[in-house]
Image (cartoon, rainbow, N blue to C red; front, top):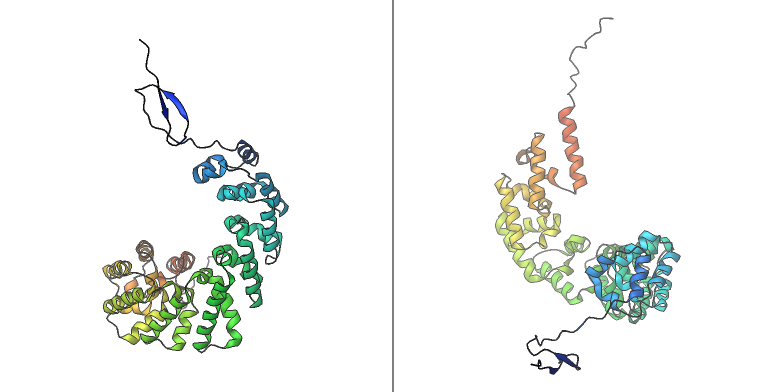
Length: 377
């Protein structure tokens, strides 16, 4: 008996195929084959193809791809084989930029980079900032000209382009508006105009993403803090510190944090402002994080008065605090009587303090009135 053959039409591929009647009728879209020329060229550059397939497999299916052209440009800037492979592994989309786009970017970046070596260093750390679509080039060029017209150091401009490329891809009018808002706030708070360029350079280098924030948000936050009793001088101090910069915050978030901190510390409005000025980062932390950190200090016998004296310890995670307390305790240091300052700082700062405690314990004390032991000679 002959087996019946049924002709079906694939709903995706729209062509007739012959299948047995009892077979599954499902149809799947076949992915296009990898561009073998691309794969071979990447192998030739010792690029980890497995990593590319895992992270950005779609790049290997695109045509055209400019693997050798990207490698040639990087080599011309002074990059060695390891750097070239690392850049492509980190940002495979680089090979989809046309030679014209890459050349245009090189010319643009060299207007703010002191040397090709500096540019290679930027590309190695921020490849996505360099290998961009041609549709952004005009905005990039206009924004470079704008920041240079402000007298901003070229190195700062290149740092902005690398760290916050979106701010240079957006229309220059948006950056002009935010910079004008920053300048107005700076002068309104009583700062001197002749210091403004230095202040703006420092601010942008510390927090390049400020350019992506809303000017209205910054104004709302400054107004909120002013209503909470911060003077113009105090607001200027906050505005000048990276961790106290108020574009990252919102009035509602700060209100919850300030209310909780004041209730927990049991302090006055004036005392709370002093705590914030010592530790602006306190404004950032949500209530659950602060709750955990306060509770952990209380659990080891630290008083609220000690925390108010050294509030920057609240910037440390619970794990870091407990680890440092145990290390200090091993050398006889009690934070309940010796103060919290020894906990503060970066890992390097703490290791220095810890090292001094070691020396103090291991070095014998010299007694100036003790008799000298004479030799038998």
